Image (cartoon, rainbow, N blue to C red):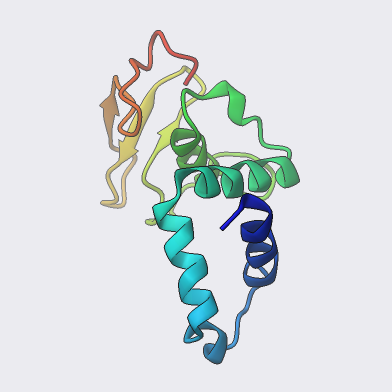
Length: 125
């Protein structure tokens, strides 16, 4: 499948909510398989999301890191607290960490990107 063909599937299946019969369709299964198995297609979906939202993904070492930071922001682009689905945060002082969801503000500070391995202090993450 070409990227252009994948884009058509993406535009069709990214409009939520999707009816159950769509989830169970063979074409949706193909779309999700391609999304998970083809890095170019996956990266394109991330870039599409960032472009539509105005998020500056180029500030980060890789698209996966940018995506995890993006997921931790609210509608106004501020750090969202209290969401237990957040796996990565960047604080104003440049600290990167994995939040510990115990009701407090504890984190596990990290020095390397879990996705690309770049050292966070020296990389553009």
